[in-house]
Image 1 (cartoon, rainbow, N blue to C red):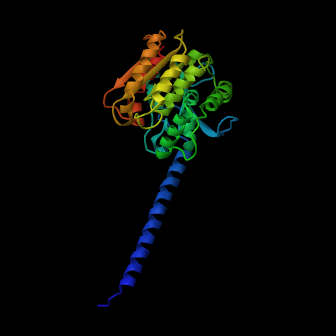
Image 2 (cartoon, rainbow, N blue to C red; image 1 turned 135 degrees about the vertical axis):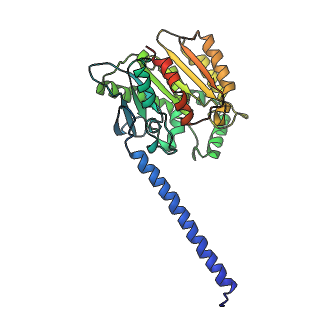
Image 3 (cartoon, rainbow, N blue to C red; image 1 turned 180 degrees about the horizontal axis):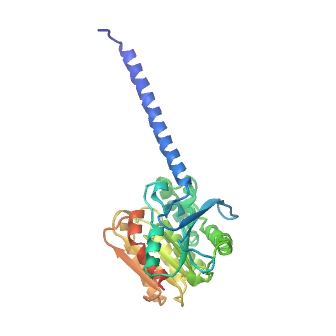
Length: 328
């Protein structure tokens, strides 16, 4: 039997290791390309249709897809409420999402329509910008009221979590300008919509819950109803020494509009995974809502024992906020 030297053996190991690294890199690349290709596909909803407006241009934010869902019996002869939803690539079709989960917006709305539970509605799914998502959705005014050292600390925490490589600064005021000054006028001119605040809803989960709350406070004359699921009150991924919950509470004390006719806001949270961080701040927020005369017809907060932080969990309870906000 032929023997090989130690040097030859090490050379073979080196080559094998090099080949394995290349294979691993190719597999990762294949996965990323597959996800990108899947997400570029127009969603195929179980009910209704989706119309895509590709790379919708804006003066305020980076271009992004807008996926508008229309119910099966949509007709220009009727007027529809409009629900603007963040993370629009996650709403309608799990075959096109990165984690193979979806909100099931089309199925839930269609079921509620058939049960005559809610008024007619279309959905505007606004894609997030990927790497810029955290900055787009992070309420800007509360952040700017932090001290410089607190802002630096938040940046460090987000860098550790891989949410940014640069110094962090929210751009959510521009994101809301995009919604109000550009997207809403386009939607209202393209589709048959009810344009008043009572029929203009905004919703999302996690950071999408935060930006929905912020929109409700900053533009109550535009967004009269908001769905804030699993609202990400920590802003980062820990409560320890975290100044952000206090900043959000202080902002709401000052900026949450008083309860008014036709306005409604919904909050909820689970108790598992990331949602386990939310209850203490949500309880403080509920106290503020009560102090501003929000009652059961204006506001609802729900706790879902055992519910995790995922599209699967939000899909399971989506009918609850939709019924509360769109009830006939």
